Length: 453
Length: 184
Ligand code: SF4
Image 1: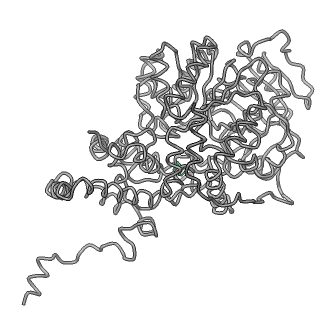
Image 2 (image 1 turned 135 degrees about the vertical axis):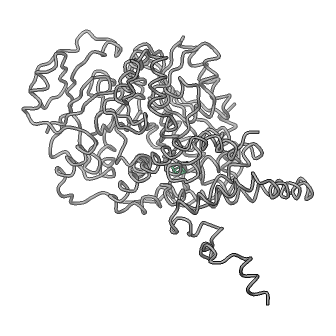
Image 3 (image 1 turned 180 degrees about the horizontal axis):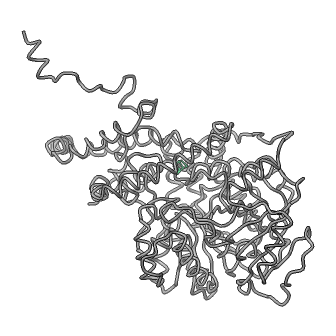
């Protein structure tokens, strides 16, 4: 069975790549800090954002009904999908009804979660991911390794080789500007042939029925405004009650994600254009179930900014694919176990509990605390299977130098790379109420010898 | 039926949340709006154009479409175009923006005034005209303004299209316009 330590072991074999990956993401984290410092009311915004989200989740049923009604009044068709399969079926029906062959899709972690691409490809549709990073990983037949920077694990030389093979780019030219332009030419062709566009949704607004999509490249808008058919796939947790709430979230999102004050395009899709058709698919797929889990409910507040990944010492040094779940990093590690406790029992342990993720999260999800709660739950689930078995497992762990080494690896990471203020805070149960161990001045053996008498 | 299932599932385990918070981060008497807007726009790789720069641009490109009411320039007309798919070869598009936001250099564009929504995304280069008096301090002030704007599609545009998807190197001109000029 695949697990995080095993996958990470694979990733860290290439030490140069690890260093580079680590530095690239830390750079994004630093850009975030600079952007955040320009907003004096940042902490207030975080508090309000968390409250708005918590309020919306507690009243989700009525806000969803408002949203549906207002979206319909805007000329939009609203669909409800209780799970991934229902979502894919709804999309399929819309496409078939309109004789669609070619689809352009902009970034959407939800369609990733639903496995929409393989579903449609298996039915002879051509579906093209149009975000540059997403197109790169689609060509490589890989999942994204980060929710905002999907191709962050790939070097430009590899993109160059890929584009030579796939797009006939010139040999030896690995300049990102050149490669981006090659992709632009290739994708423009796809846009000009598309029959339908699919997008993800950053925010749905209950009182106006509009959906907001944030991008930097302009790919989502090219698709939506060219194609006669548009489908917005939206998780039911994406709602905010009022249009003015958007101000809070738009101010938080891009600053947290990349350190930009706002994405280049913040698109408000409200009414259907003349001669076009617009659909919104509201997807549950486990969300209402999670809402009933009091301890883990707030994980649904996530606005998918990726800040918790950029700051995580484990994520930065193990890569997104190590997490073997659609959403990697700290937030993925608390989302995954609710979907399958057994398959993802390793993920809550892929953390030093340093607390950095909770500190940067713009909607104040208590990620470290939830990681800790999942650990307890996982331990208990193990214990339920019988004390003997769990004791056997524990002794096996302690007896195996390899497992022990992995544990040491995590600890060393934590100690080496984080200043005290990051390690010692209210979240970190390891260091609660005490300082970190100082390196011993003398060894126990020496001490014993001296004090024996 | 999924709709009934979802609504039922949401109903089945009710819980109490906090009240919907109110907030007021709008800026009452903003100062230096123009200066701050220009600084934010430049940081996002937008160009602030003088009349001379604009004349240079229109001289440089042959397929120029002017849909702005604020500027007196006759470009090509969009007559006879029935489908957005026919709009691929525009070198330069000039449009009006409703207002700018000082904290981030974004400009609100309500595409209902345009013949096609795709125009500001498909043109190779974009110029947006805004009036100096139409600037607000931050996004709260921006949404206060938008509240009364009855748009079908509206967008904040905060610079030329860009990406950093290859090794985090910033590339200007990803899939939409390769440059954004702002003309007051
Ligand atoms: S959990 Fe918080 S920091 Fe992580 S992606 Fe979601 S909103 Fe961003």
